[in-house]
Image 1 (spheres, one colour):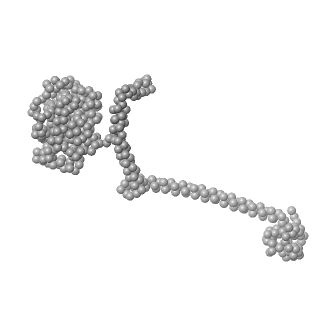
Image 2 (cartoon, one colour):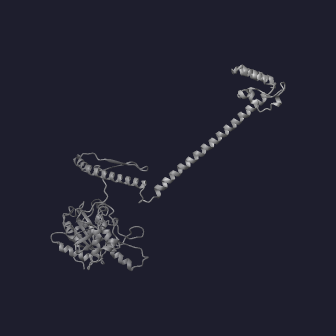
Image 3 (cartoon, one colour):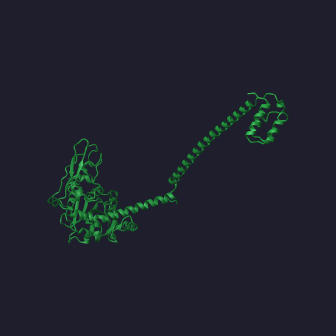
Length: 461
């Protein structure tokens, strides 16, 4: 809308009255409006008339000259608003960009910290003093303490459980176990034994009567016996090549026999696994049942029977009153000074201060000066190989075997070149064409006591 300078001043005066401006200022504004411009310009800079201060005064000196004041004012306000909006929008966009960059930077820093901590924990050496090592050591210590506490608790609870089992009446119902298979109907298997708490052990400590073979003192004894003039350690090396751990807790006799037969290089005459012929516990399936041997072990007579059925000569000694310590010492010296005779002991662990009772193990050497023998215990999960006094071993053999009522003793094993069992097959194979298929000869079994005594070899040359 177009308006003159006077109309504009009139509106300004009305606004001045509304703003309670003094009358003198109104007169001044009215009197000076047509000459040098609005007198309120310096005194009231916030009035509407001050918005067109940039206009030249000479261009609006006449009172009736029309001016597009309102249009100029509206455009200016719109431009200011547009500038403010543009500035605000740019500020918001920039703020969003800044926030996004900050979030990405924080994420990168967090990832870098996690990676640095992981690398520090994984790459630091174990001997370096760090928090990771301290934490691991603390956890290991806690685990050891917990394991000791559990073992102690189990040892305290075991007698109570045993007492409860013994006091339980015989009419206790048998627990039943259901075996379910998707292809077969359910079968119930009943057990006649009461359920007991399962206990576990990891090895046993040797009593003070025994010296561990791997200890400093045990190594010293081995070196002294090996460097002695008579060298009663000849049999150690064939046995050490075939030293095994018994596959079952009651397999000490079978494992000892397999170890000795392999040390004497006896050919079993039948396959073990694949194309190989080799002695292992499961091949001794005569003289006694493997299921019975797995549960109760074997006696000395059954050991002799199995040895003879598999091609070795045996000479056994019962440790009665007639078998003196000096005789035992001479047998040990004779066997340990060669590499083709092996002494297998059948003794009671109780006499050596060990847990358990009847056991089989071979002698791996003799220390003449200290009168000690090296026992290669096949129950390595329980006791390691150890040195023990010969007199103590003699006393352990004199203990009576409850299954037979006879004292225990020893058996000397030697390869029999005239055997009718697997050794004969071995000789046939050595002299025959290697391409000829193997046809094992029948193995006579001397499981009865009468046959065992009839086949006994009194003297070995």
